[in-house]
Image 1 (cartoon, one colour):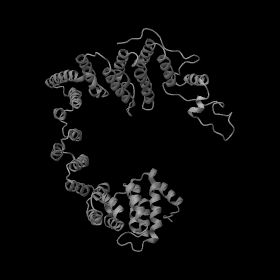
Image 2 (cartoon, rainbow, N blue to C red; image 1 turned 45 degrees about the vertical axis):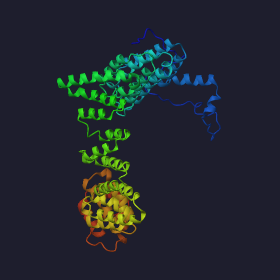
Image 3 (spheres, rainbow, N blue to C red; image 1 turned 30 degrees about the horizontal axis):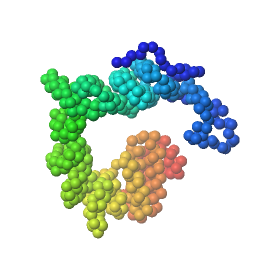
Length: 499
């Protein structure tokens, strides 16, 4: 392992880096704002224009900004070190890693991106500048880098995964670096990979076997598999099941490295995840030319309802690969019957002659009329048959939930022109649910819908068995008389229902 033997950091003359790890910000001076440019004329910032400033002026600007921008200060230090001797760059990179290791600050969600950028600049300098010149040193530094995971995750909120992504990339970089190192001992390297795999406490080293496939070669992969299986047996004997998952994942990646689908399946079977990995398994079977095997597996799989659509899409794909178009259409129609998905219906129609489309649409409308879930049915009918959609609203309004405003409001708008009663009932439905919850922050939405209902009232010729607008106003006043905020908003909107 490389260690710092002194301070070899490149100094940037005239400034010290800001203490804050963020990028920093400050008010620009009048000169920087461009007051030397005529009013109304904005000078375009382009590569050519900046290049024309000359190297000296650009250097002055960069050094000036580096005084308050930590990221720029670090980037300049690393760039300067890259132009020095290899040892100088190694020592600068060691300084950077020691700085990260010694940092005790906590980086919250908003600050974690700056730590990720800090780490990525170090990683990039190792790979881009050091690796071509001193591959062994670069390998040692990348190994040290990926083992920063405990340090950085213990003191950061990496909810968006940016820090994790940098370390995962470093794992890939380390594997690629080993792959080009001549004379490497593949058996010894297998032990190094096993150590990284076993030490993956934060889930960022999980792709290490895939990253090292080329570097390990067949000899290294065989040794790694032997160690993994031995450790798996030991964990099972000691009832330490929690430690088996990284090992099984390693076996899966070894199987992929060899193009061995059966071993990949066996690894998932060992983990008890064969059904959950159905799509991954089938993709590998397809790639291996074993489409019929994949279809047999799909048709026999026990899949939970919330993942049924994913398996059905795969089922259709496999049937089409086998030339069984009729069976694929049958699966599409079954999917549509269950979901009333417009997307699935369009896919079904796309595989039919155009002279059959009207018949199928009529069947779809009939199916939607009888469907158990009124919101799903309404969403489809609005696109296929507005008369049928209006009829559903008139007959099943009590089953509709006004909280589904994202679909009910567009439906109401679509029905306004030719079906004002159905549209009115939908607007009332959305207004009622807001008032029933008595959430004053949402009253403006209720008012907007009730304004729309009031506007349509004069266009309704027959209220059938539904409350007339006058009776509806009276009911709203009786039920919600004490909601002062609501009535103030209603009055402001021109609806003085309380008199």
